[in-house]
Image (cartoon, rainbow, N blue to C red; front, side, top):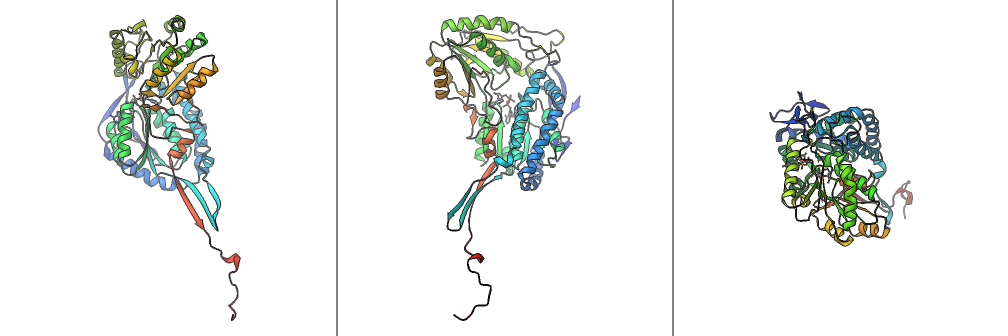
Length: 499
Ligand code: NAD
């Protein structure tokens, strides 16, 4: 079994706390590695080293920092398959999906190549007589990123890219469930020319996170994960005077209007509902057809497509649609919620509870489920299931559907499927949700826009990646300078004569 490590000062370093977590192969259920869980002392030491390394990195000109990003892009592309294989083996998602995970992170590194432009300040010429005023964006110092299991390449890259390009040192605390890819990315950044100590990957659990929150050197914390932990980190980090942004859970609604192309809507729901076994914060978990006729037409198309889904290990071939969920505990929680759905009166149209795969009986596979006639008081509606379970809530009208999505406590993503531009426009304008798709089921913004949810899906006032990230990872200094008239206006070069 592999013993994983931390990444400190440009090298793999064994943990010293004596505490470890198991890293599973979700397809077989076997433990394939052990990851060390850092103590407070290990975390404090890594932060202190990062602070020393940051001084020179922060003073390196932005163009040189951008060249490290440029080199990293080439190296990540070079190692794409190797990274994706490791990612699939620890997370369980298909090989193609693992490459997508890396790709969407890579695009943020590409965006960060523009750091010299993005870090340009503002300048006012002649704000007063002989007075100029200018602002600079300066790095914060040491910042931390705490990331979830479901995108072990993308989200660490979303954190690392902007933080490092802005001249900060970063402490990355990845998910303990799939920690290998972040360690591989740290190696790649070293090869790309990142100085040692500027990126420290410290593995761990709550102890490591609390050590980050309690450490006065850490200036900012960016978190992605479940809402209860997001709220905890946001409140504790803010109370400690840090700059904090936390992105939490989701329950994304897709509204299907009666005029929508039903085949297109059904296809979109299959990909967005069951892709990555539903373990995406932008997955669609609630389908809201408007009108009974729409619901019946949609259901009729969905059922055969769901029953035809191929569930298997990432090694199972290109036609595997989705893999296992990440742990036995995740599987148990999904199946528990399915039972509550049945008990609370929802109609289980496709039942994936008894799914089993020959040769992989111990794997964490969950068959696809479809619930119809779900109501908004049921646990399967109010809670994030984070599994291959699509719920259908029938709405009587557009206003009913809109109100439903607006009343839900989460506000990460949403979509409307319609041929009516007026309805689409109204929806985009009125909905209280951060990312909106119009005939697009998973509207993840590209790297040069920003990503972030509203309500209980996002805490803090700036989003991830895009221009917001360069604001989050820098602070503004404004200089007012006055140069009184000097030599050019009559300095005396000769000895004064008698007046
Ligand atoms: P999680 O909250 O369990 O873990 C996230 C991180 O927090 C991990 O690094 C973990 O080690 C740490 N952590 C866990 N428990 C902690 C505790 N008690 N104290 C301090 N730190 C703790 O989330 P997860 O299961 O890894 O990821 C899935 C969740 O992330 C889902 O809710 C999903 O919706 C959400 N997510 C949100 C976004 C977004 O952008 N909004 C993106 C991806 C995932």
